[in-house]
Length: 439
Ligand code: LLP
Image: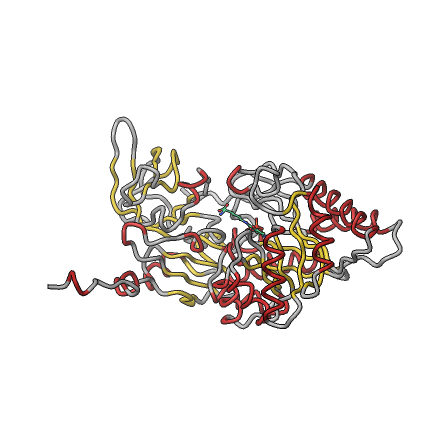
């Protein structure tokens, strides 16, 4: 039987397609070859898909004063950062580690914005010393901390205030950030007061306004509603004599994991700029620069997690396939009950059954996919799809499992190891047995 190639779903328009022999490939390279060379579990990313996803945003923004930032937390591998830096991406970071990654990968500091509710003074100092574009301040207390740090360094901190527009992004509660119940941002009704305070601080330079309402958003309305609230605040600030040089509208555009149909980047940016044109129409000042911070929509469908079926454990009640990837490698199913499509790399050699794909970790929450009709045999290779975002970056060493390898496949179908599989020495490297416990 010929394998089904669907024209919709998460593989549509990506580099992961089947060749004539029915083998699932990444840009022409059979994933079975990747597993032969690098083993499993391994994350495999398509360079072409990442670049094309990023370019969909830059093309949609062309002719407009924008900076498309890549939210590093989605996938912070150096190879991926380097690839996007070469495309002219800006970067949204949330920690010193992410700042250091951008610099180590050759990204430009003056294209970095720094988000997050709990920046430390040391992180703020490092960001100022590196000369980043903007610190997105999330509370009145953080503003004081930034001002004090900049003062000590004898510099002026470029800042935006991240406001919480109280918009329901209609996404999973764990990845919704723009509701007043969420810890993020400054409540709208306090924002003006905090801006006035910022204006009075000599070591602070107000650059703009920032908001990010959540992730995996699949409709336009929440973005436009949030923008409208941001613009209403911008008007109140203008009346108070506070000028904004940029608007940072965050990230959050969803991808297709299953049957979702999120707006295309072009549709989102067109809707945003239509709303902005409408607003600017009646105002004398030029449109500020518009920043975005997309993560998932750039890398999500560009990666798969390659894993092997270790053992089959069928029973009358339930069929378990134990695979060599686990919740420590891909945490999204355990944490959000997230759904990832699963494909056999080679055509099935056996009849289908309904399987739960589970990892070897000692937790019942350690599952990767449930109730999937698949024809599985021991040793089969599987690809867990749409794993390019929040896969490797959320991985851990739980159960003393070394982290997976990561491979980037270039446009010619050549595989490049961008992170080797961890070894035991990586696991215990930072640890010490204290002297008094040594014999
Ligand atoms: N900007 C800020 C301030 C953020 O907090 C985030 C994501 C982004 C940008 C990028 O959002 P994106 O374009 O990727 O949706 N681990 C979860 C997602 C958490 C998102 C956290 N913030 C998941 O696996 O679904």
